[in-house]
Image (cartoon, rainbow, N blue to C red; front, side, top):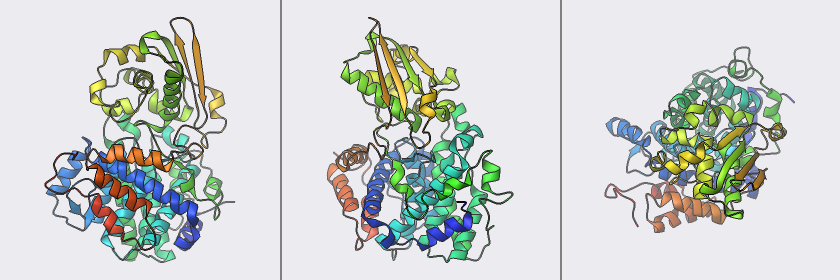
Length: 468
């Protein structure tokens, strides 16, 4: 079944809170809490500093919270800042089949818009988020993430802008014709280069913020009567033609009207590229199960998915000698060494202090990267990995990870997610405030005043360091 731009807009426009159901509503709250945790902690990232300084020098004021700060600004700039901060930790959610980080784009859009328009109800907010997740994921699946990577595009930005436009359009209560124009306008804002990999630059972190900002601008322009092309996805010069050599438009129709893509979105327990999550899982499990210590290791073999190979395995000289945190977040050898040495792989491990560790450098040189055709059989619906550790005494231990922790098939429980949230948010707020935010999100219902939640994510001017 082929779905065109108008079909996706029709689906999105008609989606209301009553169609979500309990499972989808629960998953939306679950992913919102995950987003808020990474956004709060991400506000402290080195790359967030320049964004915040730009905002302080900007004359553009507004009612929207820059999460983790005392700053208020316009919806567009709040979405830019929050999307950038939330993506800086490499701990944000990922849609499997689209290889796209959805929450950092969609929640950044929806939160900013709901603050600018306090009349927006919680149910309306959730329906707009679910619709945005759905459209961005479907566009990414159809464009084929592996092909997008080969062309140097980052799906979170190139495809995310369409979801942001849908979310903003729903919250602005545009009619179907206006929403179609907003999506058409967003097509001329689709961008996001992978060239950051060449030197560990910060531009990838900016991508979801730009997508959210542009989605808001597209909806606002459409609201004023600006016309966009109605065939931006499937047209002769449309997105699929320009951004993918091998698009499969039929994938945009997968379970249309029945299955929501937000249910097929995973969360990350490890602070690194999504393609490293399964291998890191496997190596941590081996280290714990067999009490493996770095000095015992002779060789480490890691089989990586082909789509992730150019992201985390090449160029080898950079992957085996990361010079900054971004490099480390996209270095499979570094991730493998961290997993085996620390038996955890969070923010404190993917940190500047570990880049020059002699022990890690020695272990990284023992990591052999390989491909395995068996891993590709169900990709991109599944992102498995195979790892093997050989000890100096000749013993070998192997692990196949089909569903890394955080996948919908192997999820973090609410309790585990709350622990992740607290570990991140407590870098900025006292534990009592963290618990208040978590409880507010879990209790979100039709009567919730959304601004009460967002107010909890703002830091008072007097608070300059994390409270204990």
